[in-house]
Length: 492
RNA sequence: CGGGAGGUAGUUCAGCUCGGUAGAAUACUUGGUUUGGGACCAAGGGGUCGCAGGUUCGAAUCCUGUCCUCCCGACCA
Image (cartoon, rainbow, N blue to C red; front, side, top):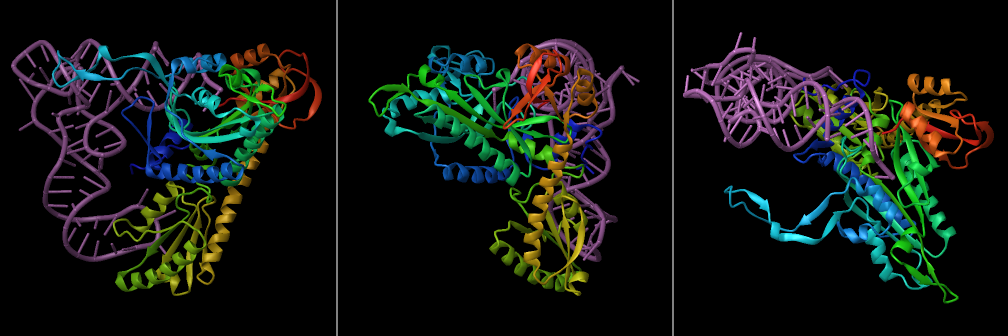
């Protein structure tokens, strides 16, 4: 069959691509580095977005929308941020096309229509937003300003991968302004907690919260908090970041407020974001060689019902029972689909929905119904059971909870067993090569050692965990003294 | 951006070495039989061979350019 999926063992990258393409999450496009998000992938994003949006609003944020284009002069105002993104910016230089006089039916850029000032397509929106905030903030009474936007951004990546790294992607970016440093730091931490809860409770994907080292920090930030997830191939993936921006942007864009003593001060800032990359993380954290495995809390389709029957009479009997069940499930807030399409046979449907990661499948077979039973199959363990029709809706709702929890527990066990403490360089290299995952090791805190480790092994410091245990030790590379362990890994 | 591979029917691919009417499987349509793990029979429709040039009587095939994808590398909030 054409739908076969490359196994993880054969080729992990190809397995991932197969899941995305054959699971109908996305498609390649005619634009280099850009993908089409297909309805199933977009439904997943919508579910993520809805949950996150509510969390943002529950924590006092409101949504707004800022322009896609950023005048170059604004973009370059915060130097470190501008430098950090300069190499991957798409730039608009002209505003008009015209007919090619030498090539009928073709268009060329009109050289007469050159922009006075180039427009940068936003790789992130700090510049345009802080330029705007300047006019919105005057007094401490205007603070805090807590705004989020759902948007697309463009980063001209040299090498792209579906969902994980594409030239254009969808995300949300929160940008907040505060009167005090403490409040801004509290906000930064609060949002990384929001992300961590989202990842663990909804995506069933355990994460480690931590702080980035200086070299991995967001350009223009004082501190970058991160949630780091672990994929099944032992590579880490940065799933969300929250930045304490200090007063860097306030100074660059001259955003001040007068305090209660009528003294002007620069405001304190944060920004935080997660993107469609989360979909890639979700896929790689849970799925298997038969296809996607989606957590019930985010799955666009949580339950699929497949009938098996001979003749109209049996079909009518099944329809009646299914309709009653679906009404109950929907009342319980369950997203359910009844696939009584006659073009495909049950076996085909089983494989298809397994590939698409539907958490629970119910088979209504005429034979079982005579005994008041249906077959219930769960995607995560592929376990199948005959279950009584009595109280079936409750059984399914409980089962979905169980699938969700089991997915988290399984991923958590994997993560826990792949955090390895090492105390020597030999061990470091050995664990990295043979086992993968996070390596907990002492680091002397210098960018030089960090860089050398990266050069030698491709492993980077993923984070310094929050509430990290303080212990004396020596750097795994340099042998210099160290106060705490940090987490290294090869990463996406 | 460097190295390698690839682009032919909706999909997966053969055909290219050695130029001569565009192929298979599957999917699709119609009819029938089926239905407990990717059903079967019969008939039918579908491709200017990624795009643009060139060589040639003739190009999917040879040459040049270009676009897109994958893998490895460099780069990467």
